[in-house]
Image (cartoon, rainbow, N blue to C red):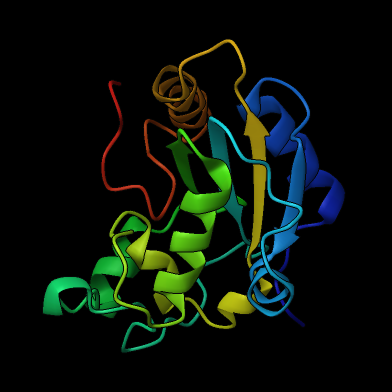
Length: 172
């Protein structure tokens, strides 16, 4: 039995964190295979979602790219210590161009040496192609301010912790 969260619970968590419905979502594997056509351009926030209720088995070596020759791998102990039980949201990011930033995140995860160091812990999770990226445009709001609000809501719901792969808290 895989200890997974239900899709409905994940959607509710995302809507609560993002302050409303998200504009779209796709599995990482699908984005890699089919491309970025459905991902919105323009400013916004995005969240990477997984379905584990408990600490998964982590990969000993990251699949992430070696941007500027730097290895994104961290110890399994570091990953276990950062894990947030019962949280489906694993990473929250922002961008002035969602499509470009989400593409960089996925490309990094599949070993391309691109500049997306944030979220690097994601790429030591098993089956990263099953991760889901959800996004929401922020037409009138600054993406950095919205990201900070989302991270604040997350921290309030999870004992002051940030999502698993967020190493910085914006302006919390």
